[in-house]
Length: 103
Image 1 (cartoon, rainbow, N blue to C red):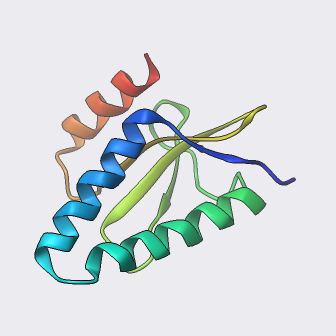
Image 2: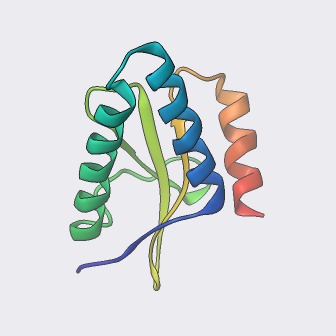
């Protein structure tokens, strides 16, 4: 089953913040992250149920070579990406963020 990947507003902000942080850290790091994230989105397009189900019905897939996870749900209209988060965050913060993204 092929499913379009839809990056929701909150996830778009997450990606921009991560890109900026990585670019400030090292030249090219932000672009490398974006390339790997694009690869994750291509995987999800082909295999929407690839990531295991985690909190609140969200699936999670890791960005290869990075400390970030993509949190998404599979719906009739496609793969809805709700968050891209640093997995070293406080679990309570991550839970709060995911709950807010559902509203």
